[in-house]
Image 1 (cartoon, each protein chain N blue to C red):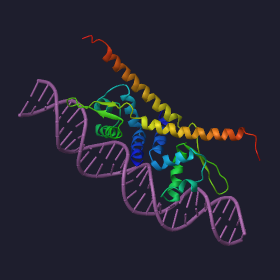
Image 2 (image 1 turned 60 degrees about the vertical axis):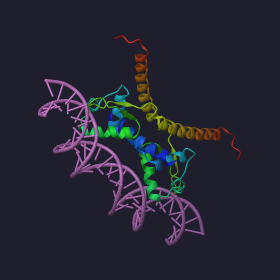
Image 3 (image 1 turned 90 degrees about the vertical axis):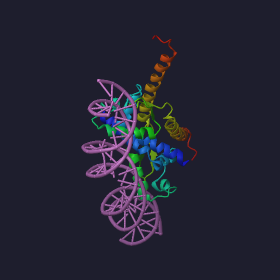
Image 4 (image 1 turned 180 degrees about the horizontal axis):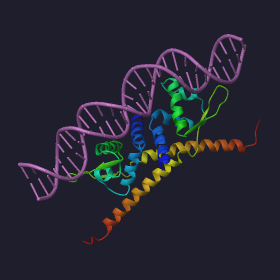
Length: 110
Length: 110
DNA sequence: TCATTATATAACACATATACTATATATGGG
DNA sequence: CCCATATATAGTATATGTGTTATATAATGA
């Protein structure tokens, strides 16, 4: 599925930046406005706005409008696709190692 | 920890590309040479070699030397840091929602 | 209404990523 | 020793990402 792939691209891409991961970590503590989020960073407000746009584009956060503020919060379940992908990979890996173990444990037939 | 951050950068960055995820998925089935890996892709061999280099740099795969071939395989546990990070984020998110639930469930004191 | 605050967008600079082709290197086999 | 095979590297073109400053928009409040 290409659309699925593109979604993982944007999700993993969003997570590949330390600023964005820090933003997510802060939002895990609760809703925050753009300025709240920008404050701790040595970075301009527009730069933070763009990171938020990337996170929103990846479906990791949503924003509501509250007067002139735009509080952001995490989207629960946004990482499910990532989890699924990682779980599948791990399953394959483990199956592979189980086979190897079995091979090594078996009395050699040759 | 900056080094920790950089590691997550490179890991998530490596996972952000669909070709690289497909390579990992194939390697989950077992060891494969560069040519084995390159075959299914509509992409030149050098391009695949570079993807492998990225995956190796992220610690997701290792290669051994076997004659003129360089079989690659997954590194078990390479995704542990990613899992930890995701788990922590989810924990924060859930704690946040638990607090919200408690708030909504509590008889309003005002 | 006007200034202030909160946020977004535009325009730009610079670095990095990703693909290609051509070529180098290194191993194995005749 | 020479050729074929497997892989890596160099050089190049192009796209994308990330930051900056300057400016636009939109809501608040005096």
